Image (cartoon, rainbow, N blue to C red):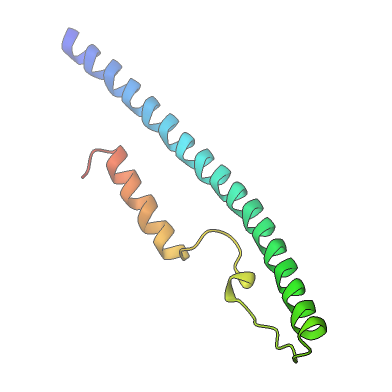
Length: 101
């Protein structure tokens, strides 16, 4: 009886800790995404500024025609990785938390 109650207590603590860990992971991922997006916007603004300076130098100072490049990263939003990669990562994390791996 004593061992059964101890097992129930420890199981409850484990489930509570697992829930806290999942919440911590969720909040950390959300914070990471917000920071990533803020840094991404700043990087895009700096890239656009650099392209503007390059256009000015090439057209006005060098007298050469300007062809604006279209860097693909200016179209990105958020961290790299598709939805499937995120789901796989979440599955691995869940298995680790449950002791499955």
